[in-house]
Length: 375
Image (cartoon, rainbow, N blue to C red):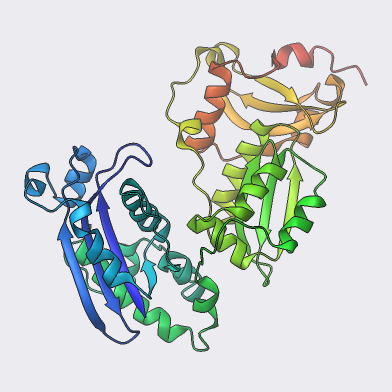
């Protein structure tokens, strides 16, 4: 038995949101057997973006029940079921947040239809609910309203159930929350880790990449990942087979590399990197003043250094060197360069590094090229 859930929330700061609308459909795999739909008074303002997106205003919610008044009904309709949602990480987190405010620990087995669709419908151009529904011929009434989106998710889930002929993929995609403990396989992986700062890649038993992340302390990050009860970590734990680590020597190169590879390799799921680290920032004036330069960081070993290259005031990529005569000509520096697509995220992160002077040295290429005859 499943309960298909969709929530609309106030928006605002992470983990300070509140539900403004909820729709739950109890589903036996063939038909809907029960339902609960309600607006919810969040007792706080709605973010203007959310109001515009959903059409739900604070005025509409003044007479709506507060969450504590509907909590019992939510428990009743979801009992002994698996929670199903499109982007379940969001809906599950918001439900946990609301119950936590009431002093209760909310925990359910869960399935994310985004992840499931990527597995069972691999050739889709987009996995956003609206575009995916149009592609599959699923009608959506009241898009960005809880009931309309939840009904569309019911129809999507029916298709996914049919596609999973042996019921193996759906079974593997159920995320369980048994508690914070670490299995022996994870302990062994962590104990064998040698590199501590860099990017790590997690694969499932089919050798498919399911997760990319970075850390300046990979061992600690993996301990948190392998013991967490949150949705994405539990999915990683359930599907883990192997781990690869790429050392970077410093966290700045690790962040740039992970942002680049999440975009290009497209793992099945990924943790939300703190948006503060690449929030919008103006281009530092020092970039235009220097035009062609490198910023220098520590490298993978004590004898190494890493660099980020700008040419004509444009971010080009990063690389490693030991001595300046390794990069004292355009040919040499290009041979060591790992090119990056200067997406807004990557660019904003590097701009922030420069603005806050979080590098060891900034060197104009003219100064380096002066010694191009040194070998």
